[in-house]
Length: 79
Image 1 (tube, one colour):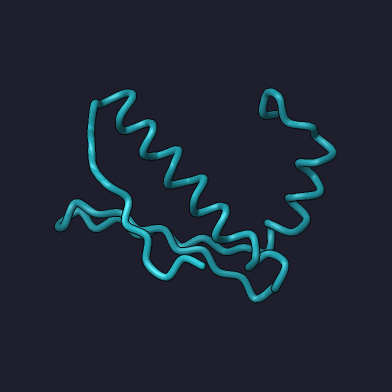
Image 2 (image 1 turned 180 degrees about the horizontal axis):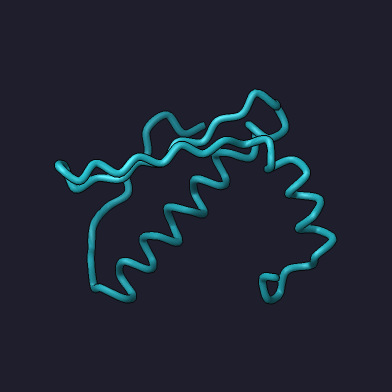
């Protein structure tokens, strides 16, 4: 269990988010990783932009905190 997370709320979110499919590609030749999230369920699809913001923000924080890696986040087509 994740500390500080209400198990009931987590279960409610997971009922929707389990309909999201993740596609993660690591390209070692280009030193790149990409994450794609998709869903045919409209309610789950509506969660994707927020999830992307959370994942990217968390990753950026970890890169800076642990490795002192700086960079930028480019957003394309955000509504």
